[in-house]
Length: 269
Image (cartoon, rainbow, N blue to C red; front, side):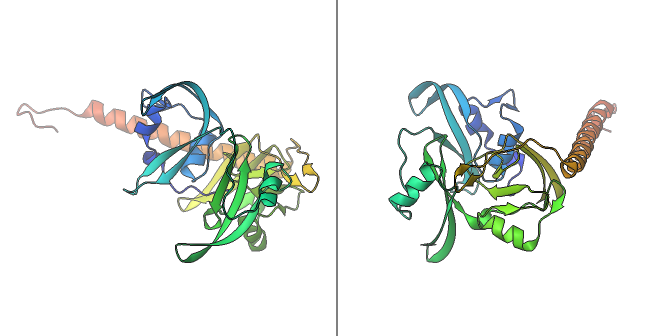
């Protein structure tokens, strides 16, 4: 999964407003999709209605969204529609492309040279948009913990290389840039701990995509073991703490505005 590289204040609200995803300053996007945008990933499919851009009127369409740094350094919104036909990247052959399209492989790792330097690229196929997705592996960071289980340096290294890793409780995980959660698993729900803003944040991931094995999609379970339950308590505790901080900040703001008065000379006190 990708770690958060932006803050919500960095979201291009005007561009999101243009496609009907901001109303009265409120984002009309699920929390997991906001996290996907802030982490440099892609959202899940989002249905847009009555869109008018560049003189083109569209009554309804499904898209995925992502962000890219613009020329000014600020994030620009990219819209990924559902294509009729996929276009193969130049650095994979037709056999490799077919393996991804048919679901025989989850990803293909390629070493390529870009701008005079070698890069490790992870190529996946997004069956939702019929599009190949290419991720610079340097951007993929492993979680610290999954369901309370600490990942070893070796597991983190394999995860960041796009490999499947197995945890001691039988949980299998693999990085994926084609889903909003940024991760595939043999479980439908996980609580992951990630380093964010210098501290540990807990993320609840649900409805995860299945892993791909030698014989196709691997079976998934909705089992919530003791590790998951304990990690979920930590997640809830953190959410309540953040809610308390928000309410406190609102009270302070409201109190400041109510207490501000003026002297007879007109200066504020």
